[in-house]
Structure formats: structure tokens, C-alpha cells
Image (cartoon, rainbow, N blue to C red; front, side, top):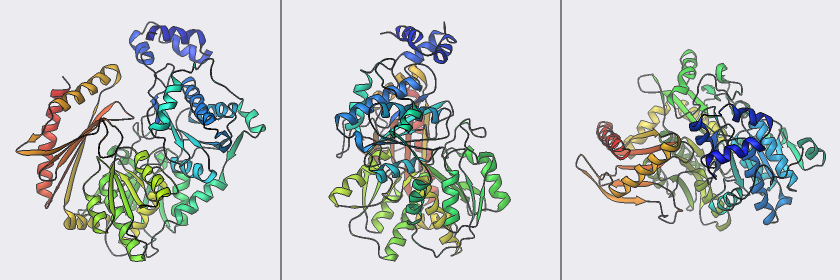
Length: 560
């Protein structure tokens, strides 16, 4: 069926609101093609796309189609009595989409637990485990721009589904007609029948207790001056409550970004990796002479920080830098308290920096590298929970995601916020800033310099360009840069080092420098990661510039 045929089918079958939107693009063939040329991809994390009518958009039909497919999998496994947990964030229509998910699951005989209002991603992961549910859904597009929404699926361990579940769901989606094959129960009827149950404060309190129990030391300066922005997302209530209960008395919330708002009025791209999100919080920090600024993304699974450098200027810390600080703080405090074991393990992704492995090895931890995506990081915790072979201590990825525990099995900006502030307060009591501690780590382990090149390729043409670049790179890779020669290539497309397949390439050079290239799994982008590690800052930064210039030039060549 062509995209025009699909468009016509939707014109005949969709409801009045959808029909109005579709008629508004009548005659706009390019727009119709983009909306209908393919189904929205269901990857290992679920769905994510621009909101609107069409098969390649996020809308109630696509949401319900995916939920019907999930329901079929649950019923085939005979697990419908274990139930499903649903959460949602601040985004436009997230609450509405979550309600549709609940209605579809309930109609399929699956008991549903859904929150009374928006909640952070880590609390969904926690609740799945707490309630011993078989699955969970989170309606969120995480840090994407406001025109996006998404649909993440979780399994009984509390982590995002892997291919063994994602594949069958995707297969069933292709065979479900969203206009006639989806079962549906009125939401109020579901509540009345006991099929839909509302979660609230009781679950919140259980989650916050677990977070507070993570504390590693109370030998801290609780007068630490903190500026916090939830970026109009879900982090406001849980994080401010956690910090207050932890004893921090000087927490300033950025008013312009305080309340949930899916239009994100002050920052069109609400990703704390983006330095621009700190423009307003930085002004608050300067006014309050803050020790630290923390920012969480809309679903509060990612967190980034800003603090003063050696010249007294507020600067953002990369995910690798924050990861290194957290790893060193947690591992050193655990050792001090006698909590460390010879089975302790730290996990990071193949595109994360070279500093955390050195820190982990220094403290006697085993280091594992896995594919990008926290579903892979937390799968180690799932496996070790059964085998007891290793003890999961810390997992992180360079894109500001951290999981410090195992009561959640996903990125957790709430727990990380508490631990980051505890860490900063611990060092403040010793007259040290986070910048100074990072410099001490560099002096001990080697200076890390890093860069990420992110090139956006939107639409149908963009998909083709990304494929072209990856194909050409595999055929003729850039392996000689200013006299530095690659000594090893890692191609993950067919699976490597015991890991599942992923479209990613990594090139390791003789001096320890490496770069990796892969298409983003959630955005229309191609990403290149560069990592240099040298004895001096000057040498590392010089090498980084040489690699960055060469890779930028070669990207342009491969994209032609």
C-alpha cells in the first residue's frame, strides 16, 4: 500500500479531530509522504516521534495499536494477572495517551496501575518491581523537543525491553489494524471494575525512602548552595523533597522552569546536555553564589550539573566528567565503610569515556562495556540478580545517564541528584570544589578530553544519508589522522564481544585515543564520539582538535 493509499484509508476511518488535521494537509504531497511513507519504528525502547496524524507519527491510533500488541504478548505468556504499570510526563497529550494505554490493557483483561499525575521515569521502573508487575509503559519523549512524544515499554525486571520482547511486539503491530483490531474499555468503567488502579503518595514515599537509603556519608556541609531546574518536567516534587529530607537547607528552584509545561517555553530543546538550558539557571547561580547547579530533563532520568571552575566561572560538566566524579566518590566511600566486595562491577557504554574504567580498576572493580542504551546497562543487574556472579555498583553513559542502585533499572536522575549534592557537600566540608576534585582525578589517572559531533539528517532523505555515511565508513574508514594510526576496529553491526547487534563502529588508536560513530536510536541524527586521554591538558586538547577537524571533514565527504 502506497503512502497515498494509507492517507486515503485514514481519511475514511479516523475520528473527526484526526480527519480535520488530515484534511488540512490535503494536496501537500511532501507532508503526506512524510507522515505515511512508513510506520513509526518500534525499536528496543519502544516508539518515539513527532505528534500528529499518520502512521509515522505519535497519535492515539499508533499508541493503541502498540498497546494491543503488548497486551497480546502478555496474554500469550499467561501473565495478565500480574498487571502493568503506566506513567507519563509533562508533555502535550502524555496524560491522554497514558489513559488510552490503560483502557486498552484493561479491555484485554490486564490489571493496570496508573499514577494520578505525572511521575519521573525512575519511579515507574521502581513501581514495576515493587508491584511485581509483568510490564510497564512510560509515555514520554524524554529530552526531545516539544513536538515529540514517545512510548517506552518495560518488563518485569523494571528495565526497558530487549529484542526478545521488542521483536514480537513489532511483529504483532504490523498485523494489527488500529481502526478495528484494538480492544478498548472506557477508563472510568475500568476504574469502577477494579481493572484500573490509581497510584499516588504511598508509592512515592516507598520510592523516596529507597533513594534516601543510598546515602554513603553524613559527614557533609548541608549549607551547600544548590540551584535546581526541572526544565518544566517531572523532577520538581521528588527532587526538592529528597534534598530537603537529606538536610539541604539552601535549594533555589528556577521559577521560569519550575512548573510542568510541555511547551517548554524557555528552552525548545530541553536536554541538559545542551549548554543553552543553563542560561537562566546560571543567572540564578551567580546571584546566589551557588556551589552547584543541577538540571534534570522532562522525565527526570537524565541529570547534568554546572559548577565553578578554577577561575570562579560556572561551567557545565560533561556526562563523562560527572560519571567519573560519582564513580570515585561512591567507590571510595564504599571502601571506607567496608561495603566493597571482590565481586563489585561497574558498567558503561562503548561510547563512554576512558576515565571511569581507570577509576573502577583502581578500586578493584570489574569493568564491563555494553551497547548504548540503559536497557543494556541494567540487563547486567538483571542477570547478576539471578547468578550472583557480580555485584552491580554503578552504571552510566556519557549522555548524562546514571544508575546508582538496583531498586530501579533505568537512568535515575532523582537518586543521582541526591548523590551529586551529597558528593559536593562532602567536598565542600573539605574546602574542595567539584572542579578541583576533577583536576585531582586527571592528575592521578590522565587528562580526558572529549567531543561529540552530532549531525541532524531529518526526513526520508536524512534516513538515506545516514545509511550512506555508515556504509561508506565501513568500506573506507578514517584510520589515519595526522600520523596517528588506528590499531583496532570494532564493528558491532553483527554483534561483537558477546553483545547484541547495533549499528555502531569504533576505532581505537595506538596512543589510547578512540572515536566511534553511530546513528541515534531516538533522533534523526548521526553521532561521532571522540575521546583522547593524555598526561597533560594541552596535549589532550590539541589531539582532540586534530581528530575533530579530520572527522568533520570526512563526514562531509561520506554524506555526499
